[in-house]
Image (tube, rainbow over all chains, first blue to last red; front, top):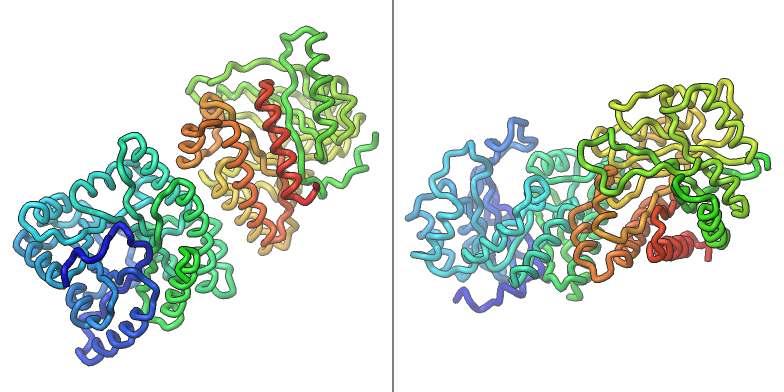
Length: 305
Length: 305
């Protein structure tokens, strides 16, 4: 499959999954993959995202609400286990533990399958870094195959110290053609970075890339705690509404959808290409159903149904 | 006019003005009052608010964008100069410069006119305080006439250090029956404090008082700077949209109105009595017209027209 048969400027709706834990038996892995495969194939999405889970414990001294588990290699999971999924595939790759040869090898495998990649940097300075994000981009540009790349956009980072707008343009120069946020619960934080990006684009005469806002169902107080642990900014009122809801999961979908509607109106007015990535990182049936409902509701907003 | 002919629980729409500068001739003051009087009388508002301008320079080391000017006494302005305005009147009073006798005298005058009052505390600890806010409430309760009182609610204070929800209930115990915010540009900050107030009210079995969100047209970059100087939180995206607007004043009305619509939907869902105070503190014709337009648009949202 050639990697250039899809125009990544057109990407608007994706679905993100985590590979199964490495500790599972091969049989169980294949079972999970078969169920996911059937579900994902039916979704009105442009691409499937397979995440590369990182421990991230080096980022904070607060205890991780859920224990970190090693998973199957995301690239293997995307193209072997989920080979029946017909949609395009985007594979995340944490680059800090790789060396140059490792990254080039990974890029070649990805290219062979016609996938797109997203490089993820180290979660903190405290971690030992073999390969930095900038090095990874440079390596792909100089020696690697020209696989399509997405970049990570973090609104919270922009609110805290600015510069995310400039960083997006820099990443575009380094090969990224679309961007994906982390789970977004603060529409204000998202609007702030979109706004700065838009006005900087006007001043510098640059195109704004497609941006996918990640929506993530939240099924429990512990998941909410985990979001916060990951650095996701959750406005006080939204946290209150979730914690007091009769059905926290259903409430989280309603709030995420109405937040996206607000962002979408904001983006359309400015001519920005805004889309959604629905994150489904839980294996609980209710949360999986919720993620499918989210995809369908977003597809309606985007005029796909 | 007795002070109890109006149910202050029903208050939803007010209009706030600043008295003319004391340096103006009596003739000029009366001219301004006559023009304001005609304009205000025609507004679909429950009450007129007359502010008591404070210097507030003690609050910050940053230079005040607009120089501070002494004005005519707000109570005189409300009931003498604006005597033809038929609506109820709410007079702000900075209490920190008063002594006990002064406050009691002021309350008696207000009571004689059938007005409501809003006590304002010192803008900072740096200022010399003769009478604190708590003392003022105590004095009214123990020795003063039972004039209706409104309280000030500041969402930014709640975002910064919390406790504004508890403060509202404490002020209610001390005699406040409705609340007015400072100029609100951050719907998230407003939602946060409304949410905490709502859920605290549920836990403690308390009624939530009517809350008037203050909307303020912004006609120039300098006004925006002044808002920030006053401690008003302005989200980055909104600041961007204002500063890049072809017509900043018209844009500020549109943004304020859509912000209020969002808050109003949020409040209605929770059964909160949310209203609006439109602030008109400029003497520029365009900004005055803008404030009138705002009142009319809010009246439509509130189902008054």
